[in-house]
Amino acid sequence: MFENLQEKMSKAFKTLKGQGKITEKNIKSAIKMVKLSLLEADVNYKIVKDFIKKVREKATGEEVMKSLTPDQQFIKIVKDELIKLMGEQNKKLNFVHRPSYVMMVGLQGSGKTTTAAKLSRKLKSEGRKVLLVAADVYRPAAIDQLEILGEEIGVEVFTGDRKHPEKIVRKAQKEAVAKNIDVVILDTAGRLHIDGEMMEELDRIKEMATPDEILMVIDSMIGQDAVNTAKVFNERLEVTGFVLTKLDGDTRGGVALSIREVTGKPIKYVGVSEKTDGLEEFHPERMADRILGMGDMLTLIEKLEGSVDEEEAKKMERKFRKAQFTFDDFLDQLEQINKMGSLRSIIEMLPGGNKMKNLDVDEDQLTHMKAVIQSMTAKERRNPRIINYSRKKRIARGSGRALSEVTKLLNNFNQMKKMMKKMNKGKLSRMGNMGGGGFPMGF
Image (cartoon, rainbow, N blue to C red; front, side):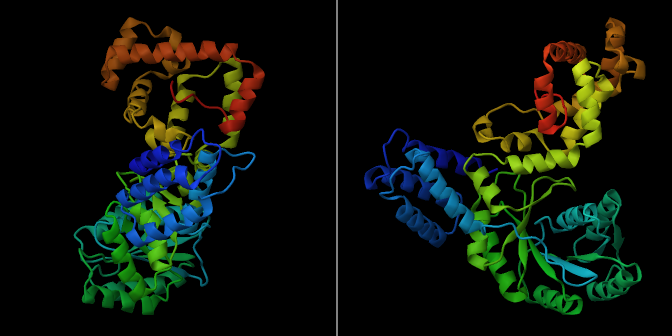
């Protein structure tokens, strides 16, 4: 996420290392690099100009604080201004009515339908009863896609006659009342471009449903074109917030840093994967930390808490202490890691994770290990010592992996058990406190 922006920012901060204080002379180069990094990230020129002016005013001539070096002080100034630019605080959905309506809008290809499902899953996990409404009748297979996603996350999808959006919404309103629904999410039609007919249809649906939230879904990879589109949608519909998708891709960052300043409306969520659990609340301070390469430990901890069962974690810690864990336990750990997202996204949340961009992260490695373990018999998973050469060959054939991979996994597993026997109780307690027991990422 924002790799190029992170790299350029890091170079700017390095120019101030070793200085006694921030001065007009030594700040000039750093500010120039920050300015270029923002422009290259496709941030609106006027926003960059105002941003740099504020940073320069705060940075020039300030004496070094006791606890901060000049580069750290400059980083703090830039971070504070980034947070202000993106809205300072996390803005949650504001539900006033019951049922409450959330209207999803945006251009075709922005990921609107998938985002509607992701939001449904998130709200369901918070204890709300959700109804998805398929009001996009124009895009081929849009309704079918929503039905498949709805089945996956266990949320009902209302399709009506599958032909007339306004009729579908009207009947969905009756359905929502009859079934005591808390939140109705309307997946409205997207277009390849903004047109009058599209906006008029959205106007009518808005008037009919009186939604508490109108969320515009934006492809963050598009850049300033997306910001301009957001401005038009906001002027017409008065959107309440934005959802940025594809932040796990090659995103330059311009949308995230421009959209609130241009529209006055906050980013409420970001899409970080194609999976239905790949939706995160947007926190300006955490995003600023990511942009500056400081990681995002709070989000990582939240992911960890959401994927790790506390009782299971305690049970796993006890097994670690006695070195009694099995391949079945390891399989459970792999599933938990998988729930947290890709290895790359997890690494990026660690402080300094941006410096590991050249790290060869094989996203298929976990899948391969799972295949090998699942090809073992229950007896072999409980007691790997019985796995001889012929059993290894059978496991390799069953998993479709090379014999060497099976051998490597077994060797690493045995080394892990030996290491756990040597580790003292205090170290294991600290590991448990960090996440409740788990295999290191490098297993």
